[in-house]
Image (cartoon, rainbow, N blue to C red; front, side, top):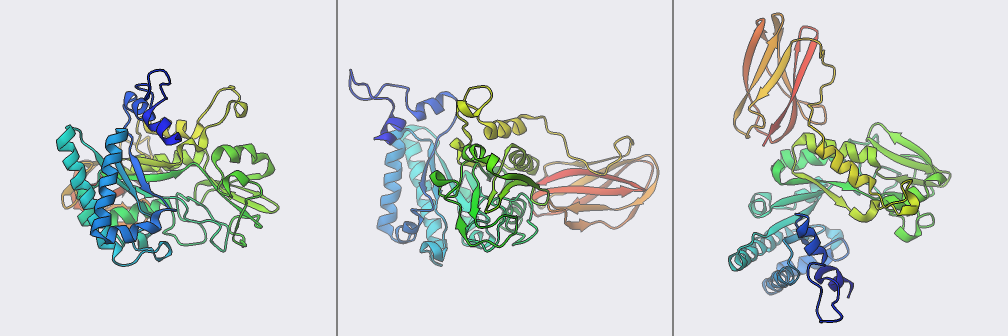
Amino acid sequence: WADEQLLLGENDWVNGGYKPNTSVVDLAHKAGVKILMSVGGWNHSPRFPAIAADNTKRAKMVSSIIELIKKYKFDGVDMDWEYPGDPAQGGGPADKENFTKLITELHTALQNLKSQTGKTYMLTSCFGADVKKMENIEWAKVLPYLDMVNLMTYDFFGAWDPIANVCSPLYPPEYGDPNFCVSSAFNNIVNKFHVPLNKLNLGVPFYGRALAGVSTLYGNSPGQADKATFPEDLGQPTYYNILKRIDQFEQHWDEKTQTPYLTKSDGFVSYDNPKSVGKKVQFAKDSGVAGVIIWEITNDMLAPDQTQSGKIETPLVDKVNQVFNEKTVTAVSNVDKATSDKLSVFPNPVSSNNSFRVKLDLEKESITSVSVYNTLGQKVMESDPVHMKAGSNEMNLQFDIPGTYIIRSKAGEKVLQDKLIIK
């Protein structure tokens, strides 16, 4: 009943049916926003392997999705299979090929629907941020059919781990798998599996992970979610509930992962606040991806009694919009900005397998080389040192792995750099 009220609109008790232009889909379309249905999720994903493996069941699922899209005027569907090939969810090796079959058949059905309505429908999918989960996808086969790849860069750590760690670290934590963070997941999915930046969305959590029986970051954890402090969320507190109880904790900031956390004598909470959300969104913006996904968007809706304004506020969503709407300024560190020396890269972005040019404008002649660094600060390429004259110099380079990079050169004592995006 609640779904029908939300998706079809308010009941028209006088005339029958539903009042026009009152559904969440109508309101989204009025605001210029697309709205997709999502199928699956963690709780229902154990059903996927058997469905995807059976031609009849697969066809039935595809058909029912199309009927729901037509009934509720959705703009497409997001497949949230968590995760193909995962034994913990009843998966196995056959899921890899069967996921491709499911995506392919959904794409065909959406194209057929387009021929009937004249409207284009989106097909997106959520994916795990663990390399092992990425390996269970036939990327070359499914990418042509997907409009968006939604990377779930959260829940890297939780109550299931032996130590208290960060739910969604931007950069590798001090302890634990260095691949379990946003930046590493981004590098893996782009550089190892060649997902194009213009189809990739990075995940930003609007919730936290609360642990009982541990009081420090990286402390030994008994493996218990703190359901006593956050009973309504079963130990996975929304941002607004974290704020309600934040005075019970001591607040900290972890420079290594660029995230906040809370501690008390018998509790630990890893979460995201406006500062860490802003840093994640800035990373996404600098990396040149399509955008971000949020789980879950109502989790930062502060009630009037929680705000100084006395009105509903959404501080995390506001921070996402603020960062995306700010004028882009290339980040430069350790650079003498007062000098006329300058490094620039063009074309930028550049397609993989194509060369790009590095232009160096120098006040004085010098012996210099050009290095390429990934977003983890690792050097992935370096040119041979060459003699450069005072004035304008150019160097052709080629690096064919898609991603976001910093091009850096040292001219005398001055470090020059620019950002490069390879698609």
